Length: 295
Image (cartoon, helix red, strand yellow):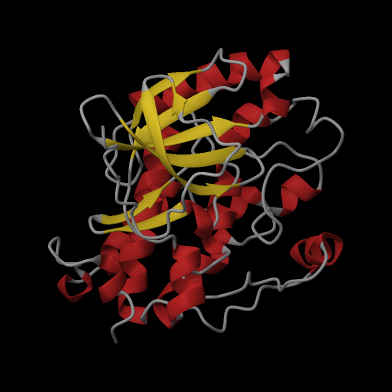
C-alpha cells in the first residue's frame, strides 16, 4: 500500500529522526522550527485540515508549576478571537511534554521577509503596525501578556499580519529554568524594566512592538553581546533612522524607558487607524509578502 505523500508548505522542513510522528490525534508532517520553548510542527487533523503543533521542551514539562500556568494561559488564549492571532484549536497541558495546536498560518515571518527581501515599503508599515497592535489589544484585554514579541513571531499571511505564541513565555516564567535569573525574551526586544528585574506587563509588549519599527534588520539598540545590548537599552536612545517620519512619534512613545510613558495597545490602534488611508490597504486576494516590498 502506497503511503500518501504530503506536500510541505514553503519554509517547512522534513521531520528529523528524533521527531514524533504523531501528537495527540494529529499526524505531524513537517518541522517549522525550534526555539527556547519547544518545537513547532505542521500537522494534519483527522479531517485533513492543516494545523500548527507546538510541543514544549521536556525541561519545562518536568516543572510541576509549569503545567498549571500553561493550562491557565491556554484557557485564556482559547477565548480570544482576533484576526491578528492564530486561533487555539486544541491542547494537552498535562502531558509530559505539553502541546498546543493552533490554526496553521501560511507565509513567512516578518524576520524572514526583512532578511531575505529587505524592509517593508514605508507605505505598508502602518498596515503592519496596525495589525500587530490590534492583536496586542485583543489579548491584553483578556489578561494575557506576550513577553516575547519580536519579528520572528509575526507571520505575514495573505490575510494580514498574525502574531504567534501568546501566553507561552508567561507560562514558562518562574519555572526552575527562569528562577535562576534567565530572562524570558529575546535580546534586543526586552524592555528596560525587565532588565531591572521587574515582571513584564503589557507595556513590555508595546516596547517590543516599537523596537523593530517594522522596517529594520537589526534592533534599534544594535547587536552584540546580551550585556552590551542591555546596557544600551537602559542608557541610550534608540536609532530611529529607518522609521517613517509619520510613525516616529508613536515609536518613540513605545520605546520610552518608563513603562508608564508608553501607550496602551488600544491607544496605539486608535492612533494608527487615524493615520491610515485607503492606499495603505492590502487587497485580500493578493499575497501580503508581494505587496509590502512595493514602493
